[in-house]
Image (cartoon, rainbow, N blue to C red):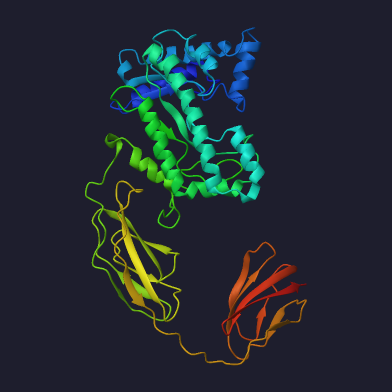
Length: 455
């Protein structure tokens, strides 16, 4: 995407740099700016000001000379090497008239493809119905409105392909796309926000993506795959601004937090686009467990050659929630800590492929071990604790835990740890700034949260 206010010299140097430094076996897809019809963005207002108002031109015709100029410069720089260049004109999927008035005002043969976005989401009507349900709305309430909106969007794309792609015999690409299940107007926090976020992890999202990609394939002409860029790889859930990521964060363990969008994308990419491991990324074998105590256990496995990382997950037998930890390449064991005494656990392991970090093997079959029983408590008396003096200047005393040293954590009002250690009878708090604090301590199996004021 060439910056909208780039000078001719800038565009020429950019095109020259790409021509000379890009691997000649790769193609460059060049577009002038991004969504220059979208009034949310500054480039649209800039082009309206300088291309329309200052030149007494109507919109959008006034912006086409800027697109044309960009295409001409790239064509001149790549003269004799045009097989390396694809010149793309961006259009808005839902605005056929504007798309036509941009594309058909450009010189014939000066561009090679055009590109709307490939999103599906909600209509304003669907938003109103869900807003009436409010916090009671569920994923099942959202789904029919997404499906209805999907067909409307597909009609827009059929229109774009018919009016532009078929008439000019050029391919239709998708500069970005995916689910756009957000409220109306965009940026508002909806009353049904939880249902929107729940949908992102729901198996129905996987089915929606597969249906969407299937519709795009049926719309596509020719045997060569078209291009589709998902927006974006990783982004957190947000009911207000949209949940755009294939995953929610880069190192997401999809066995613990589902990523149906990512799974659907992997299952939908054209087979020629995959980069696979030099060897099969297999599941580790040779599992066993040793050094089992009441609160820890060491699990072992055989190394996998192409793995750069292992993920181990474990849980008490009968629990629905897994905990997860990882081990690096060449490791063959991992100590699991903070386990429950006298409890049977199951654990599994999988490997991650060396040259495709997001492609993993399946988890191994479950292995089992049982932690040792808990040790009997040495101190039997109840633990009723108190801090004094309060307020305190230097030395803070504790009463009620006898002679047992107990771990403590001091937190400030922002919940940040400012001091930790073992407390027997007193601790020095003279270094703490004046203010209110909370002390969290464990005494005879009970957790206590106490407050004190530092003078």
